[in-house]
Amino acid sequence: MAAPRIVAIGTAVPTARLAQSDVRDMFAAQPGTSRLTQRLIHAAFDAADIETRHSVLSQLASGQADDPSDALFRDAAGTLHAPTTGERNDLYLQHAPGLYARAARAALTDAQVAASEITHVVTVSCTGFFAPGPDYRLVRDLDLRADVERYHLGFIGCAAALPALRVAERLARSDRGAVVLVVCAELCSLHIRVSDDPQQIVAASVFGDGAGAAIVTGAPGIGRAGGLELADFATTLTSEGETDMTWTIGDHGFEMILSAEVPRIIGREIRDAVGPVLDGVDAWAVHPGGRSVLDRVESGLGLDPQALEASRQVLRTSGNMSSATLLFILRDQLADDAVADGQTIGALAFGPGLTVESARLTKRTTR
Image (cartoon, rainbow, N blue to C red; front, side, top):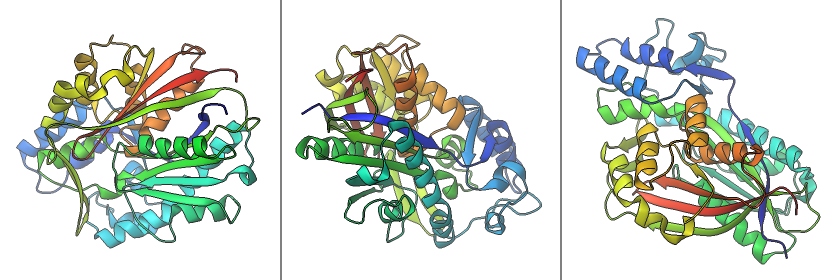
């Protein structure tokens, strides 16, 4: 049996495109914002190395609501409000299924795989909940077979794309005929909040919305040639950081703690965390939790300044889309002729509790 491989990756983002400077100015102009908080907002947004992000909330981009529900977050005067968690989750249910389906259709088309060939679905999200869930909706929306096996990985956070790909790799390795659809969709902007807390300001400065999908199989004759072979997955907990990155449910949205210690802990422990799994790789796909996280990974692993350019480019154009982000980076490297046949890609992502997920992928232009 051939090694399980990502045959193709599809991505999707909402139509509302947010300029980083506009979002910064919107937050800084909120009533009651102190001069100190304004300075913190400008510093965090300007240091993020982000130019644009996307959101399902059109009013955050234009000031004009395409949907009446947008007004839950921002009124005609530009004041941001604090919807309840239930109201935010209702918007997740309204917008997430379509984003899941768009990314999945893009992956199927690029892979040259028919919907009827999918045997397993693995969905991922940490920004909303509903049941029947996104795995069920994909079966209905894509007209998949009713007997498709379905799995959902919920509330794992930014690192979740790699566990999802690991599940797909295990399924494909144990079942010769498996063709697995993996889809990560995150609507991070639904949980924005006005705050003078530096951690909440940092969160508001980096997160965006998006979805990524991958087709994984080891079956011969399925889909187009080439792809990214999957191998050598690893999970590691750092020795500290359990309380420095957390994601909990509050009364007015999900609440992120993202302390300034996170990049420093990653920088100190990244070499031991990746171990021999990623020794000697040719290219890198590192989840851009933020610019400072990428800087610390670069210095901690002694990488060339250009080694993380693929990650930095996705951060610049789309921000941190939580679990979906890594698939955007792998999509670009799959299409990049500079990553040649047989070269290896080291994938890294970081999640709550300071979990480090890693994998080694090999680029194949032919089978």
